[in-house]
Picture 1 (cartoon, rainbow, N blue to C red):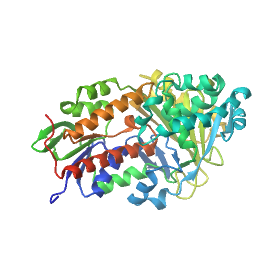
Picture 2 (tube, rainbow, N blue to C red):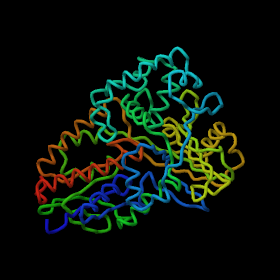
Picture 3 (cartoon, one colour):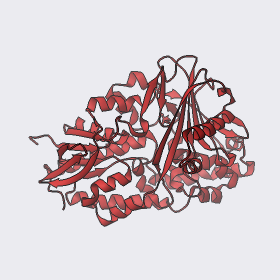
Picture 4 (cartoon, helix red, strand yellow):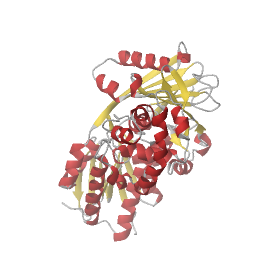
Amino acid sequence: MSDPVRAVVVGAGLAGLAAAWRLREAGCRVEVLEARAQAGGRARGERIDGFSIERSLQVLRSNDRHLPGWIRSVGLADELLPLRPVVEAHFHAGRVSPFSARSPFEVSKLGGVRFHQAMRLLRLPRLMKRYGPLLDRDVPERAAAWDFRSVRDFARLYFGDSVEQYFIGPIASSANFGDPAESSCVIFLLEWLAAQSGRFGVARRGLSELPARAAERLGVRTRHEAVTIESAGPGYLVCSVDGGRFEADIVVLATAPGRAASLAAPFLAAAERDYFAAQRCDDEIVLSLALDRPASGASNYVRVPHAEGECIEAVLVEPGITDGRAPVGCGVATVVANRDFASSCAGADDEVVEKEMRAALERVFPSVVGTVRFARLYRRDAAIPRFEVGAFRALDRLRRVQQDRRRAGRRLYFAGDYLAGLAADVVVGSGLRAGAEALRDMGANGAAPVPPR
C-alpha cells in the first residue's frame, strides 16, 4: 500500500506494547494511548536507591516463546538476559523446602503429601499425553474440550486430596491466584505442560525495564485516556479525554475487559457483550521489600499452599548481584497476597495490610526479620481475571465470533491477560497475536474496509 496503515493501540501494558511493536515492525504508523502516567501495566516498576521494585511478582521460564526475542529486539539483552535461575520451593509447617516433581517419589517428599497418593501421579504422563494435543499457551481456547472440571475435582479424582492441597492446587493457584475449587483444571494442565521443558528464572535487572524501554522507543502517549471509538469513513476515530483525535485503520484494545467492552460497545456482537459482561476479576495486593541482606543465598520462588492458612500465595526472594535488582550484599522480596486475603482487605488501611503480609513473610523467611530497608505496597482493584470452570469454553466462543466479525470487515482487536493468562510471556503473546491478526486481515484485503455500523 502506498500509505502506511494507521493503528491505534489503547493500553500500554505488556500486551499493548507487544501489539504496537509488532505493528510498527511491519511498517504501520502506530499511536499508543495510556491512561496512566507510566506504561507497563502490572509489569511497571521503579528504581529506588539501587533497588528495582516491581508491582507484581514476575517469574519467567527458560522455554518462553516471546519474551526473549522481544527483549533482544528492544535492545535489553545485555541487561536482562540470560535469565537468572530460580529455585522452586514449597512451604509447609514452618519450613521452606526445595520443590521437585521429577518423579512421584520426589513429590511424596513434599510436606503434606501422602505417599500412596503421590504414587498415583504415575497416571499424570498418560493423562498429559491425552490432553497435550489441545494444550497451547498461545491459543488457550483450544483446550475448551477439557474445561469441565475444577482443579480440585481433577486432582482429587485422579490423585487424592493431599496431592491437590500440597502439589497440584498450589501450582494452579500460583499461576492465576485463584481458588482451586473454582479454577478450571486447564490452568493446571497449561502450567504443567510449560514446566516439563522450562525452568523458572528472573530478568536480571527486573522485567519492568522492558516495558519502560519499549514505551520510550514507541513514543507512548501517557495520560491519554481513550474515551470513545467511532466510525470514520473507511476507518475509526479514537478520541481521548484531553480532546485528542486519532484516525486509525486498525484499533487494538489492550485494556481490562470492562474498559475494552465500554470502548468497543458500538461494534460488539451480542455474544461478545455477553462474554465481557460475564468477566470477573479479583483484587491484587503485592508487597515489595528492599532488604539490607539477602533472605536466601539463591533466588527462591516459594509457593504457599492454601492449607497452610497464610494470607500470601507466593514469595520471590533474590539476593543482590552486580547490576541486578538489588546491590551486592542486599536483597529484594516480592510477596503476593492470596485471593481470599485480598478480597477481605477491601477498605482496610495499607498499614494493616502491610503488617499482615510482612508477618507472613517472616514466618516463611525468618531471615528477613530486622533487614527491611523500605517497603512498597501495591493494590489494584479488579485486576486479576478469573479462569473458572467454563472460562476456556467461553473464550473459544468469543474467538469464533471475533473471527466472524473480522471476516465482515471489523478491524477491532483485543489483547490482554484475560484472554491468555497472567504469565508475562503469554500476555506478550496475546499482544503479538492481535498484531499478527490485524496485519493478516489488512494484507488479505489490501485496504482498510468500512467498519460495520
